[in-house]
Figure 1 (cartoon, helix red, strand yellow):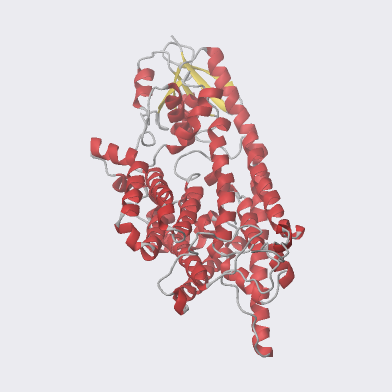
Figure 2 (tube, helix red, strand yellow; figure 1 turned 135 degrees about the vertical axis):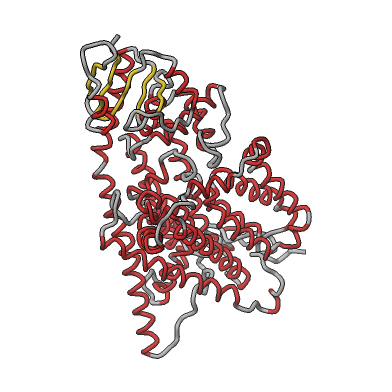
Length: 590
């Protein structure tokens, strides 16, 4: 039946992907590796500086590794799950307790966030050059951003990669054959449950993505898919739910109390800390510990971009579907989303799903910012509390969308041929999701389009430049941080040489010292007046109180050291001092 029909070679019917199509992906890989390498170098140099809260998570990992306990919450409180401790426990069991070992999982979580952000940008319809831009923005790291990403203090490093994964699952669940998606429903529920246990800061994003699912798959949610999602959610949140049932604890109430909801701050302080300082600090545009005046330009730019991106996404979402697409919300019937080097033409349904998920990202970011601004923490401690806005990074692809769209409209990007190659397609006329049609207007319209493009490029350049300056400032503080870590190691070694096993010290000294010594030295917290302080592990205080030879430790020049200096003397009941660089050890005389 096929006689006389010449069979074409398979290669002849499938055009080869030009070599140039790999350029943005290769550049993104190099930029991502540079971002990971930068953070690894910081970890090897003992940066960012550790603290007793991170050491508390390390102690939880140590107890899990030894099989001595399996804590649900961060020690001393009834909120913020110990997911980071469970991730680090195998490494602690193999290599022993150290800050580097504790932070290796957080570095892996950052690398995962970069990869997921690239994929999310592509799934939302951005081309590879736009995905490269997103990776470049996320590869930079100011002092605040690095602390959020790498310090294993609970509740921050895991939120961004999990949030990006949830966005990707939402896109995927609004596409494809219903019967083939049950594992994704389970994954969506599991990730959501784990996030709610780890830190409820992510709740606005979970609710926004859930609204998208309810809009595009409400019939499935009523049936088996909904049951699978609920099962995954219960499994992920099981530690939180079981602990609440056993002990009658309310994690939400504990979070509100800890956030300063009952404290006093004026609305002027809250608005300044939340809307002016918050976005630049959280997204990496400020120097360590403060924001210079010129770095605050991002505050109004962030709000304007948030509004513009929401308007663009809403208009795309409300754009009428062609008759053939009415009632069909997913990407494609066979769940074949355009792949690298094999993109399919974009349609109205793809634009609607892209717009819906972008709108969810923006709504989640806006809700987080609003909740933070309304809290007293934004007014009382705006610099340190900006960590609560770390999840804004999840919305980066949606937030930068208006800038990239404006640059494309103005033609301030590679030629159409290069755009087709960057998308992995040689087909003429290929367009990405929400790519604007050519603007055929008069001179006035073209000038406005060109002006918008120039402004967009200027904002993007300003973002990268400001973030680069903040990153350089963070690098400048590394030598001092490394020197302080060396002094702390000397302190631990000196205590070991003196045979000291129990000490009293300030809150920010105690658990750090205990973790660094692998619990060879146990510490009870005191304040500057030598009164008992807040012990996250009460067993340590009982051990210290039972030791008549317990020593005291204080940073040199601190109020606690000045108080203890008054007790120095030669007779019984007084103290003698052993000084090490940066620290003072006070031993009781007998």
